[in-house]
Amino acid sequence: CIATNDYIKKTKKSKEAKLTVISRSKSIVESSARLLYPQSSNNHQLKCGSNLNIICAGSGYPTPLVRWSFVPKNS
Image 1 (cartoon, rainbow, N blue to C red):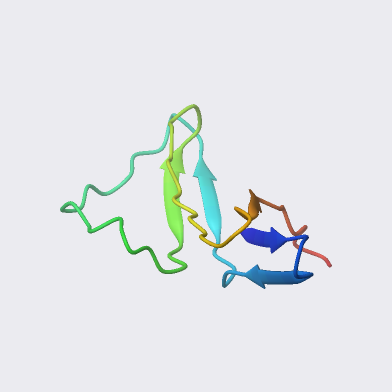
Image 2 (cartoon, rainbow, N blue to C red):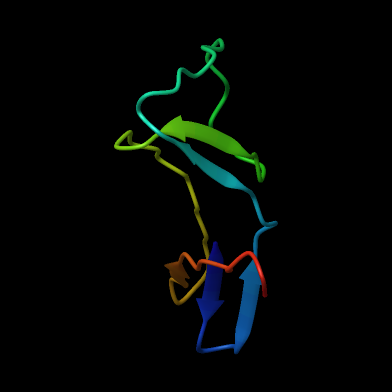
């Protein structure tokens, strides 16, 4: 997650996390619920086709632009 404030030319980047997508034919171990906010950079595993909400929040004035980026494994 990257938050940018163009007015003051500042950018903040969160820590990277790993997302592993598991094919639908494989099972995934269930776990108890976890606190989602504030969210640190946690690694996640989920079945292909499942949904995952990842929270990224920023504040400032003017309101910063918040975006996600994908970092390829070999970069």
